[in-house]
Length: 117
Image (cartoon, rainbow, N blue to C red; front, top):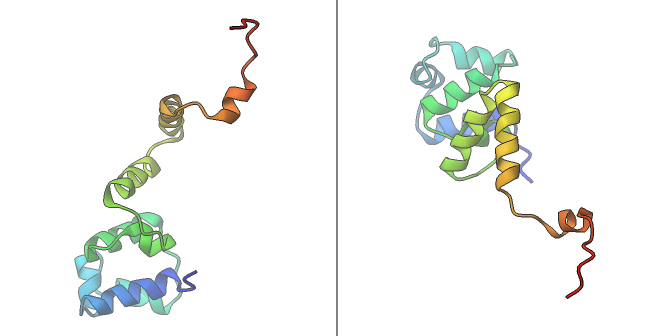
């Protein structure tokens, strides 16, 4: 398991791209000193800010925050889902559950039929 923090992953990504903190901040649409302040003052940014930074650096927000390495389409769905209000999330969950195949566990919960073949 990777013990690096999101800050460590951010610094590694900036270094890998050959950028300094100022340039990386500007690419993320932030003030030139944003990342320096974030990293040296141990500030806790919002998820939205981290997503903006990741997008500015062209890296995965889920990798940066959680160290998850998933395909881009799945990540896109997760980020869109995360932006939904609770009522819409519930609707999406219901739709996904309705699309899933019935498992053996669910089958066992169904009442037995009296029909014998």
